[in-house]
Image (cartoon, rainbow, N blue to C red; front, side):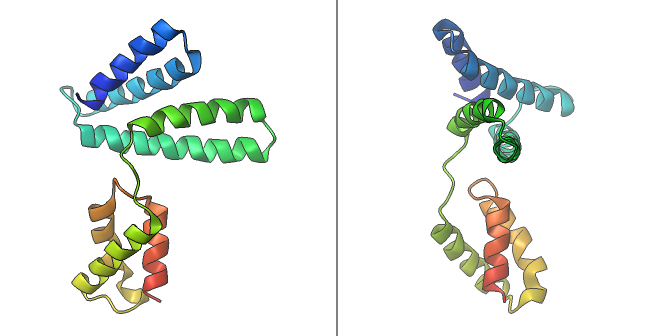
Length: 148
């Protein structure tokens, strides 16, 4: 079952259970998927594009959550946490820092990078290889640390 179908089923279940928070989050996800479909000129949306949209939504929720907690807005922070948990259900499991570091070490030896000046060679390959499995910020930090 594709991600779009999973979200549609989730919406039906949330409506039956009268779970407003989950329903709000799922409707937001469906809206993002519909925007993808219309932006690409119509047609079916791939799961890869959906995952990228979900990652973007997750990052937005995390940023908003940090701001709301910083400003003491517990009511808004709670809504963001709720939506973030629903979004994370549809994302593939992220790799741990040790796994990412091992993969990046392999990429560094593969590309022959020697120092900080070679970051431009390593980061694009790492992002392509680990894009959906690790956070871009984590990838960047590990590459910087290993190439110093």
